Length: 86
Image 1 (tube, rainbow, N blue to C red):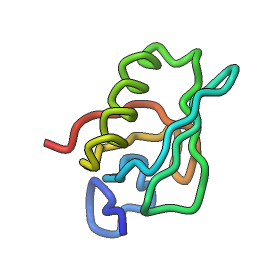
Image 2: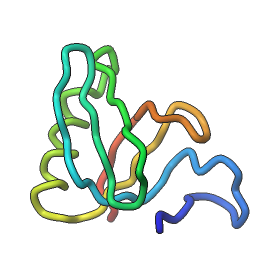
Image 3: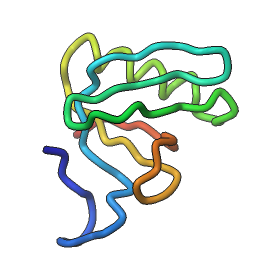
Image 4: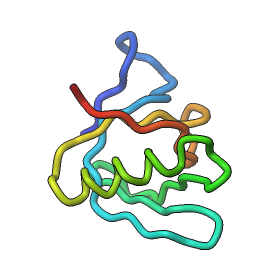
């Protein structure tokens, strides 16, 4: 299971530790799936960190290392930022 970042019982789970299963580029966004969730997540091309976040997602899909993924809002499917889990 993914683990929330923050305080115990944090309703937000706005940032989660996730392992990338697959990444696909679409016309206006990249779509990511994670082993810990059955949902499809979107990284919008309009996101200022699109290129670096997409690169991190692809690398993590290849090497199997989890990432810290932050979403625009609690329970959102829109990815805001992606960073390494270090």
